[in-house]
Image (tube, rainbow, N blue to C red; front, side, top):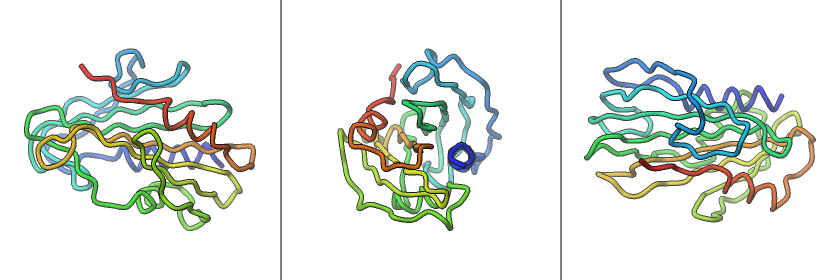
Length: 183
């Protein structure tokens, strides 16, 4: 169940661009990704694409998306990075973190017990439970200001398949395990 939730999360946040170019996903070596992640992850990236994104991007410029997924300390983990790659282009967030999490999880009607939003190490996060009893955490971290928004936004979700509440150490590990790797 947790793997399906993470897969749904990945597909929703990694959907097609709302503008001129069609996204084409390719496997990439994680060492070449803009996402710096723990060893053992699988990574994908789109090409630079023109236009914008109806949910997080500005109307013009070029953008790129990066994915990393795998297991971290037994938990199913997914990270997604949306990046503005041209000057003046920017990434914008228009939804609450809880709404973002609900919109991308496969069992969104069964998600419950959201914690209040917190911030650790510069990342906003919320814990929640799936209908199957998986303890999860969702996060969002903003990059530096650029244009009318941010240069990049990093999202992620981690669900513990063991059915027990995630510890503060597990949450901290998830929040710090991925970061933006600039050029």
